[in-house]
Image (cartoon, rainbow, N blue to C red; front, top):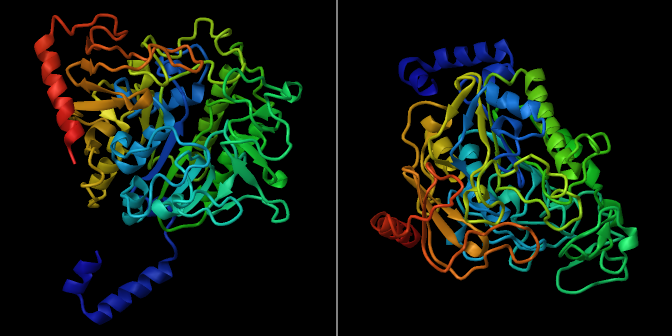
Length: 516
């Protein structure tokens, strides 16, 4: 509008117009976002394709189900990896994580994996005029090459890659340090009681899960037997920082409160929020009001808590008059896992709930349940309620899609794998992806096409996850080929009968891997 005024009106007319606007007062929040929708990405952790009741799960999730009833449910959408750090990296950067060396599951004391200057989804929407926030689980490292300075400034971090505000846990709930980080600093850290973190050897004389199991309120099963905080032993050792330690039971409420504060803040800009839940990652410790909410044990209880979180966020949007023009995207970083380090009876109490949704594998796996995840989009203004899509879609495409709809250019040489599928994302006609790459344990890759064929290259990986979870990896010394449209359980290997198709897919995957 400004360019038209400059072209067609005199300076005095422009001044008069400006005075008129100023006298009219500040626009309402509804008017601010009339053209640009707010964006809320609810990114959950370890939620399987079958964990949500609208996808066939037995645990009630009415608030998430309502998202689907009011919007668009995808049956063929994928995280880019079967583990958390690579999926998060890919979603935020538009680049498959396996292209960047060292982008496996990050240690709790990892330096920042996404550095300033790397193209990101938040930086794209920030350039489009959005205010941006990251709230919840991070697990993408903090600090420079020397690693995090826990007692000083944690920089670089989310603020250096496109977020205006961040309130996060540095890694995961089962890793030290067990603290919240707001922007660049640990929340509530007493300078007189500095925190120390070590992932190589025990430090101090604090209790550990290995030596002091009598102090635990949840026993470890494998690999989670180091420092004890809040009655739970973690991966890694820490001392000091007592005033800053979190209480696991408070994660969900704390993150909802921080999201509420950000969304309610007065602004003349629409918001983009990356809301990354800790649920349903281990340790699965729901708030007391949700403990015993299901017959499925702690894992079922944190699914109910996750559903409550979604409900609170939707209620907030309604109360603020933002529901009509807010795009809400609900998804997960990878597939499900039952025993993932703690004795919480997830396997014993699973009953007839199929967390994988009648798919094979799970977290860590090259089989479908590793990366095919729930994906729901609600946008009352533009997305038709109660619709479904079986179009092939990847989380890596959010960057190019939001760049396109906002007419923002981005660094496609770095964000090399993202594709614009905006029409698919909002339920309009679109072809979707021709293919996508799935990353499993140890950065082993699989390749899926929109015709339903899936190629898993031969590798020397183990048949099962080697450190505890009972999950088939999908690895085999020989190449494998499946048709997941006809055989979603991936039980019929077609590598011999469809050898020409497999050879073609092998060439296509090699070309993608070589792309730079």
